[in-house]
Image 1 (tube, rainbow, N blue to C red):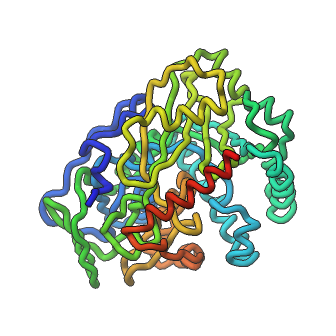
Image 2: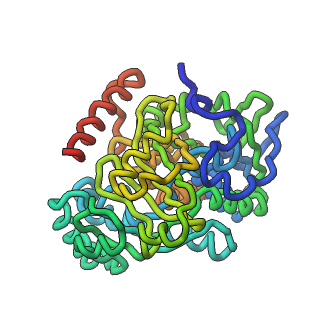
Amino acid sequence: MIDVLNANDVQGQYPLSYYAAQRPAPAPHAQLKGHKSADVCIIGGGFTGLSAAYHLAQADFDVALLEAHRIGWGASGRNGGQLGSGQRLDQITLERLVGEQSAHALWDIAEASKQLIKSLIFDNAIDCDYRPDIIEADHKQRFVADSHRYVEKLNRDYGYEAISALSKAEVREHVASNQYFGGTLDKGAGHLDPLAFCFGLSALAHKSGTRIYEQSRVTHIESGNKVRVTTREGAIEADHLILGCNGYIGGLNKEVSARVMPINSFIVATEPLGEERSKALIPHNEAVADSCFVVNYFRRTPDHRLLFGGGETYSLRFPADLEAISRKPMLNVFPQLADAKIDYAWGGTLGITMQRLPHFARLSPNIYSAAGFSGHGLGMATMAGKILAEITQGQAERFDLMASVPSPRFPGGEAMRGALLYLAMTYYALRDRF
């Protein structure tokens, strides 16, 4: 059986991404060896685990965090770096799913997640190239009216006035592509270097007292009044356990893995295009995500490259030619880049759920999990860490709200769900095309 933690990467090494090439990684943390104890043990060194560790350490808990590879090694350090508004589903869909009151509460949590990210960055001088503004671009004319009505709804019903509608001509002023017919501009959203943010959050957690153990893969969890977490070289006994594993949960907990499925997404970064050519693509430096079911997402980098994400696969192994997967949709959007070389191409494994909303679960009286951020994890996974810290301290309101969102199992079981998802995604990809 393929091991999701080692299917595509070298043990303990960051992928050959644009992000990893921009700044040296922090000095490695020690591997767990021998038997330790802690108030709280956390599994996973991405946004969720690091945020939980930081907030608990700030509250004077003795925290030990276990990461199978390196801090920020997984999806948290490989993604498109877009900090969007709201949940992964729009508020109209959420109102139908959970009712207006809960939908408003979920919106408030998502908005608080953006403020949390900004506070962590600016209050602690985390150097991660944060920039404001995201454009949602409609790739079909028939989507535009709904997008503009949604802006009106957010303005009117949610008091969110940072978002505005864009006509076809206005989108063209912001994105030098003929693929889009309108859209929205969200000035309350933003974008950043996610791996650099992970490094900064890790430093905050460590400075606050968190003991971080890298290259310390968990092999067994024994529940009880005291939770015992075993790795290949050691073990931790703790009063509480937090799972922040997302798409890398594997067989560690079957209740979570039945509802959180790993899929792969891919990103390329061009060679430096020069300031003039780079600015011509996205003159006002927003991040962009489009309305395709398999979303294309892209933005400029500080050194004048285009970073472009597009394409997904549903087997655990990455395809051989990572560049080709994202280069094709990049040229559909920007054919003027046909001569641009690709300097970096990488993939990452994220966790999705059936509803495309995070799966929060109390797995036992002292074991908690949050996963399945479905491509919307920068803000919500970081907020999830704070909410997991809250429930560990007995503050259940926001955790219980997130856990109340329906989170069905994927059909077909572990053997068939990848094939079923592939068929479904192929259908929607064909709809996008035709």
